[in-house]
Each structure stands twice: as structure tokens, then as C-alpha cells.
Image (cartoon, rainbow, N blue to C red; front, side):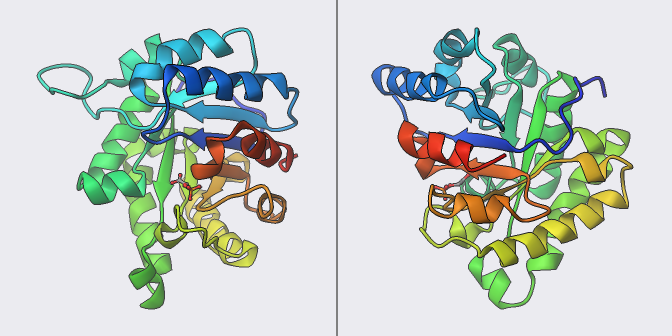
Length: 253
Ligand code: PGA
């Protein structure tokens, strides 16, 4: 693990653009984010692959970071449609989201594949933002703890002594894009479990960032970020409007 050490527990806000954007919309959104600097939190945008180049140009002279929303578990080869961590590194990506619930669900990504992607990212100096989270049915069945622990344990074992280098994002599936946010207390409870699990695996657990994601908005961000084990947010819908995203970034300090 040879990552540049980050400021311990300084909040991190990451915009997950998902499959949204256009040259025009991106330029406007990025200009809005850049123009509202400085932030007390670290700020990043994870954009669709084709937009990495223009994002890198727009953010090059700033302290705003950028990344991708996925990466291949393979280094290179005959994997049509895949993008490697080495390629992301060439575009200056600081982060790659891996294991987002939309990829677990629509692309049938297994816990082990997600762990392998996280390892591939780290091997190329790209920090994986590893997403875990339960569905509504799992929460209602009382399985939240076992589900998120299982998802995270694959990554912990696969990354081994480098586990302390990842960023974790707790994203309850029922809160993503639904306008239904976990309460700060619900989120904190899971974050505390995840940090305890990390603590059993790495001496760096206390300094690791665990982000909350799922309908983070300007009006609920501050309460979520005030929780002791919530170190920032992974923001979908509200990351597409610069005023909303900037307000969320300002809620973290
Ligand atoms: P949302 O998405 O903020 O639109 O709920 C969050 C995410 O999926 O990362």
C-alpha cells in the first residue's frame, strides 16, 4: 500500500454522477463546484468514464478530486467494455467507487468481485470507495448487520494489510434515490458496526473514512455528518445540481 496518506477523518464528500451528464452540463456543474471553493471538507466527483478527461482538465488546478464509478478487477486483456485501474490512474483518478448497489443488482457483482475490484484499484494507486448496504427486505428481516458485515469482510480479507487504505460507504439500498434517508441514528449505528469490524482488521480503523449515502440532501446533510462515525457522504441525485452539491459540501466540516 503506497497511497498518499489523507488528513485523518477530514470529511469527504463525493458526488456520484451515475449515468448523467453532457459536455455542457458537466462544464456548468464543475464550474459551480470550483467557484464555491474553498471547502473545509475534501470534495470529489465520480463521473462517467468518457467524461474523465474533461473533468481532469476542469479540476487540474484545484484541490477538487475526481474518480470513476467502477473499475475492472483485471489489469488488462480481453475484457470488452471494461476499464482498468491503470487507465483510471492515467486520467488522474483519485477514487473509484466499487460495489455500488446498482452494480451489485443490475450487473450481478458478487462480494468477491467487488473485493477484487477494490484490490485492483489500490494496486494502481486509486482509492476504492467500497459500497455496502442492505435492501429494505433485509432490514425488515433484521439482517442489516449480517449483510453489511459479509459484504465488508470479503474486502477486508482480500485487501489484507492494505485494508486501511479504502474508503467505505454505507448506502442502505432503500434510501438510494428514494428520498427516504436513514435517520442519523440509524446510519450512525451501522457506521459504528462497520468501524468496529475494521478495527478488528487494521490499526488504521480509527482514521478511516466511512461515508453515508442514500438521499443525502442539503437539508439533512449536517445532521448526518454530525454523527461520530459518519465522515462525509456519497451523494447521487443532489450531486447533479451545483447549488445542492455545494450546500452539502459546506455542511461537512
Ligand atoms: P442518491 O444516490 O443520493 O440519489 O440517493 C446515492 C448513491 O447511490 O450513491
